[in-house]
Length: 236
Image (cartoon, rainbow, N blue to C red):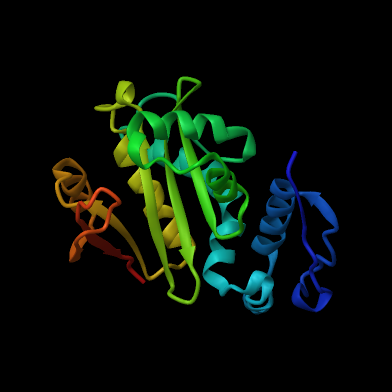
């Protein structure tokens, strides 16, 4: 089990949460999230402001991270109720136990551009990134990797991936819908990403979900291929 230290000054949390000592990371995030929901607006602002110095990053990364545990539970329910999603589609926030599954999906989708194991481990344990796994009928079928960019007020959509055997079932759309859901809850101003200029299917799906092409970066990938920078502005 992964452990992290959360050192929280009482003055930062006037709504009753005093100190989280050395606790499992997921439990700490869940506990703080529950306390945060019960707090008043002033208390919330003070808590977020206090965490602005935690790790040297601004509030965007912390806001996204503290809501992830809750989002994983609520997102699936919301999607099942409002989207024509396959029966049994469930999201969860990935942790270190899911690294092998993420590697398997990534290798099947991006064999030449798959992050190394230690980097994926960093993504699922770090404070400023999140990987949501999507399972269907008990099998991990895809994931979306998001990052909060300090000081910019936006979220970077790093990767979406769906195993070839599960494509054509609407799972890719679910990944983009979840991304927008997280961005709204994190009060992000926008979500942006890179997509290969020759990836017509990916560009089409991004446009369908409200992303527009801002510029071209060529070359961008290690193999010399170019990429579009695409962005979706979130409604305030």
